Amino acid sequence: MAKVKTAKKDDLKVATDDQLQTQLSDLKREQFNLRFQAATNQLEKPSRVKEVRRTIARIKTIQTQRANASAEA
Image (cartoon, rainbow, N blue to C red; front, top):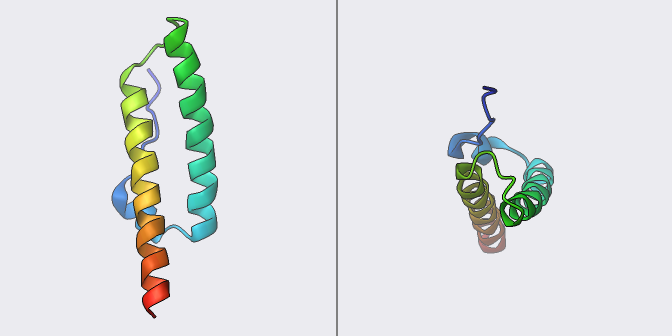
């Protein structure tokens, strides 16, 4: 079984804004595909839906924190 690449919080914090945006769009695309697989009962790894959703939330949180920090500065 192939090891699925998961983003750690520390890895996300050191990423640039462009990298985070790219990763966010990739994850949203994956989330869309996973929803279709779940609807058609073709989902191989149901836990991946949860992982993707939480990683998207982590990225959005980091982006919000950075935006607030730059607004204060």
